[in-house]
Length: 304
Image (cartoon, rainbow, N blue to C red; front, side, top):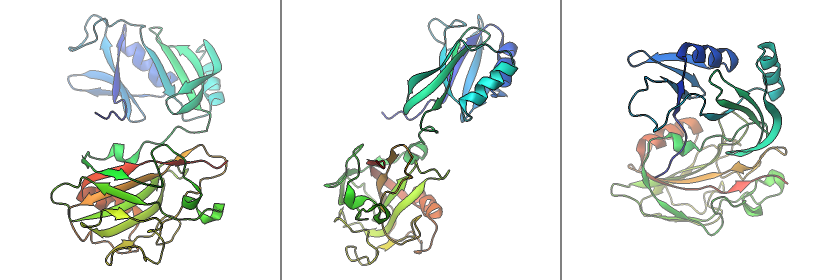
């Protein structure tokens, strides 16, 4: 079992039209109608389904009641702007701004009530933005490889050898080994991606393709540009530094902790049809279509 995010919540309300009006006007949610005239409010890839009190749809909560919900919603604009918007609409703020702890770090929150007196917490992350989703949580599930490393570990900071040379690091890829490839595996690819880079599209640090099915380990520094530690047909694609090699961690100085997602992909072909100058995005697309299994390690790094 691996739950990655909430898809929707259900609010039981006294007056669906009044709820739709409040959430769309005050919080900017988008009303939608689906199914047999059911109503919901969408925001940020999620939604609130609405049940009319006394006429709830089955199945339902054991004790549905208006006013029993407590929601925390993340704002894409500054909390000062949220407060100004609420004042203009004469929506009272019950508490805040006050410090709280969100799912991905410290947040600052204000509290208000919707028409049913549900508690609505509006928050912004103190780091300036919420944590990006893990990229592989958003792709179709595949079988799991087991990945080991002598150099990196889940949730542990990268050490100096694996930091970019612009920050005084060694710019060396870590040692990696893997087991558990499924039947039909014809080869492997190894990638490193930073979903937390402030780009809107993350940052690719390493794209290594063409590893044969007999390769189940890479020594340290296999990502260097000369390919000296690689099997004969392996190739590096251009990373987002613009080099055909591994590029170490180099987050902005003021940024929160970044995750570096090292993935080993077992693929169903010995030729992905990609050249060294293929874009990282296109390579990711091709890899997704040909991957049978994947194993991931997620070390971190933050500049001091």
